[in-house]
Image (cartoon, rainbow, N blue to C red; front, side, top):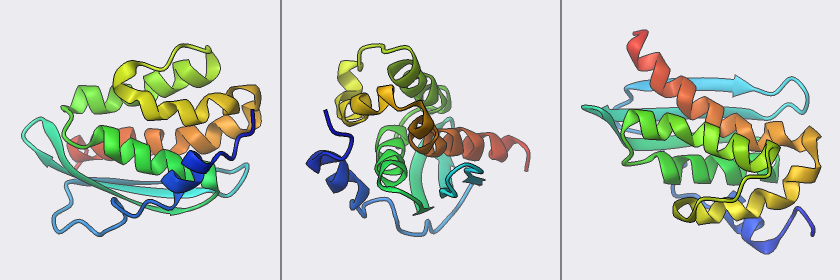
Length: 139
C-alpha cells in the first residue's frame, strides 16, 4: 500500500486549523533534526479542556496531515485525553495496534508503519500538542 494516498493529501491541504488564535494559552514549536519538519501548535484552554487549537507547519505531507488530525482530535478534549492522542498514534505506528474507532482517520498512517524513518513526521504534531498543553502550566 502506498503512503501517499488521496485521503492523506487531502488532510495535508486542509486549512481548518491554520488560523491564528485570538487568545493563546500555550504553544510549542518543535523541529525534526532528521528531516527539517517544523510544527508550531497553539492551544486556547477553557478550564480543563482544549477549547481551540491551531497549527503552523513547514514540512512534508505526512507532517501536515498529522497536524490536521492532531488539531481535529485534540480540539474539545480534556487535557488528559488530548495528551493521550500521542500514545494512541505511537501504538498504531510502532506496535501495529488497531486504530480506535473514534480516531478512524488515523488509518491514513497505517502504511507508514513499515517506514520507521517516517514515524517522526507523523508523531511531531502530536508531540507538539502535548508540549503546547504542558507549556500552560509552566507560564
